[in-house]
Length: 377
Image (cartoon, rainbow, N blue to C red; front, side, top):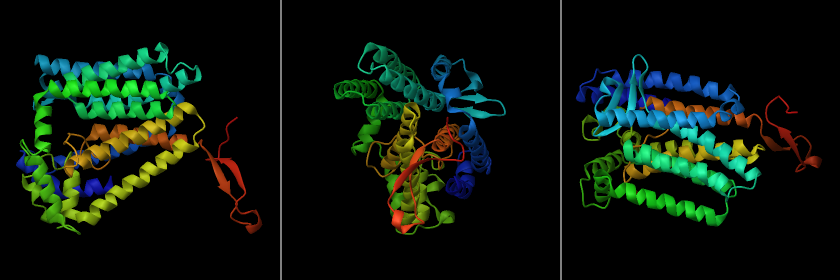
């Protein structure tokens, strides 16, 4: 968050003025988003997991309803200033005083809670390969494809949700045959969704070098200009109008130009450390549902990083998806922060192996302890 704030502070005024906003538009909005994200992270760290998990089904229904409302009002042209549309895609709601809100980000955390509960519950009942599991899961899969990918035209969020569900199913010991069927269904959905949307075909064409590669080329120019140690934040050229969405989706290219190869590597190492710590929490969690939840959080952040960085480096087709905690975008940062806060809460109740380091004669003898000062009964 601190790194993102520094970058947005340096490039925000120039970018904002070129887009017709006030010079502090990006920085002030990003600063508010960070404060809000830290607040919801604290809430997630102390709000009991079971309190939210109990209502995960209703949270998912509400999230789908908000996504559908956003897309429907935007497509009908009756949303007015309440619905924010950009290049034909209506994905955000505008609330007075609060600003924009993207329901798809809310849907990610809702599906994460619901998926963890559903897989854990059906696993205990030995129903993972039966209709008791696939009927509700099929409804979620179809609803995500229709509402998020088709109506909101947000294939990036769709991919992240599907990856989260796939990872939780894998860890939840879903039979290989069922996992294969799930993968084929998702692949078919993605192929159909790409074919019915011309702009997605254009992105594939630009990735292959046969279409408009303006965004990709300027991203690569930023990395090339940065060299090993960067040109410095005040000397960035790509943010003067060459690099689209510089403070948000393209911020990793800005990092590469301003801080160079080593600066970009440091950012990636920070993500790697965070992701390893989340996996450690998952490994040490005794509660099956919470274990699946932390796996989902890992996949959520990992997918965002891979898709964003891969797009900026021309390693995969470019998608409009944020880089967690770094990109300008309040809704995404807030919900990822809430998920990390929940992971911190779960980590206080994990069972871990302890090694006595005070006595050489007892070195290597392992016992178990519970994280935190509290004990479960």
